[in-house]
Length: 193
Image 1: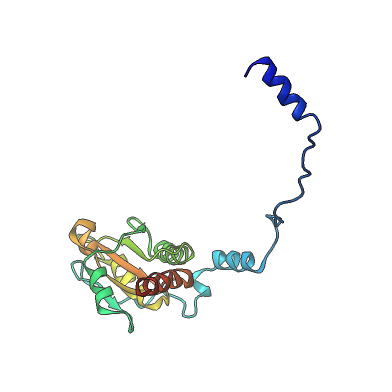
Image 2: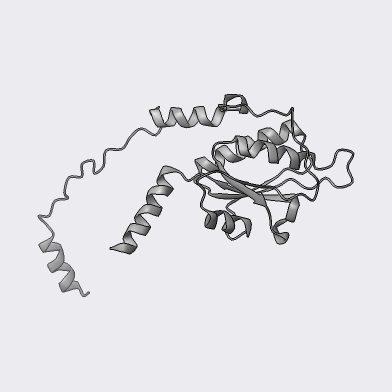
């Protein structure tokens, strides 16, 4: 741009006034205490004693260290369970329970399931070990086999494939959130259109 062009531009822009800028979007106060926020806080503070049927560290049915854990809630499709059993679902979350006491394991498992549901995680892997060579073998594994069926959000579980820990780990299939159900429904309805 030369000097002549600059002068012409300034002359043309001389009477231009900036537009007034009002609020484009009404923003909510980030600290507003909404009902949804209150519900999430209550869920985060929930302990195993808040469950409909509290899980217990007593009356755990013992399983063998090499036993295969398997559970399928009624209504879970056989193809879905087969895919879980074969380790074909993407593992979105992991919980390692090695070196935990039974009480710590119960708290960790409860938090793991609760957090997984909150974050729309569908499949997780729990590593509990086999407990071979211990005075009380497969203690945590026995606890997992007892506790998981009692949790309403757990649809199915099965001992992992060898590359994920074998019988020392368990795949867990969790209930879909309403958001995920809607997304799946829309995806499948979209195919028909």
